[in-house]
Image (cartoon, rainbow, N blue to C red):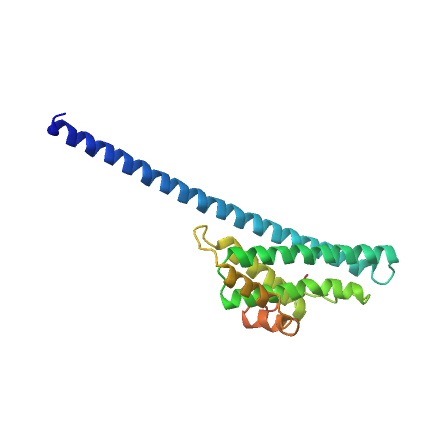
Length: 201
C-alpha cells in the first residue's frame, strides 16, 4: 500500500483508538464518582433514620418510664439496642469509606457515646432527662447529629478511601471508651452547642 495513503489511515486509527480509551476512562471515573456519591447519600439517609428512631424511642421511654410494665421496658431496651447497632454499623462504613480528620473522628466517637445514653437510661429505669433544648447533653447530641450528617452529605464522590490500617485506626479511635467522659466537651470544643431560642425541644 502506498505510504501516502497508509500514514493518514494509521493516524485516524490511532486517534479513534485514543479517543475511545479516553472516553471509556472518563466514563468509568464518572461511574465511580456517581456510585460513591449514591453510597454517601444512602449513609446520610440511614444515619437520619437511626436518629429518628432514637428520638421516637426516647419519647416513648420518657412517657412510660414511671408507669411501665416489664414488657414495655424490654421493648424500649430492644429498640435502643437496635439503634446502637445501626449506628455502630454506620461507623464501620464511615471509617472504611472516608478519610477522617481528628475532629471528625472525635465527633463520631462523641455521637456514638450519645446514642448509648438512651439504653443506659432505660437500663436503670430513669428518664433521659433532656427536657429542654438548652440542656447540655441534649444540645451536644443535636449539634453532633447535624455536624456528622453535614460532613457525610458534603464529601466529594471522587475522594480516596483510606487504606485498611488507617480505617482500622479510625474505628478504634471512634469506639474508644474515652468518649464516655468527653463527648459533651467534644461538642462544646467543636462549637456545636449553644442556647436554643425559647428552650423548645
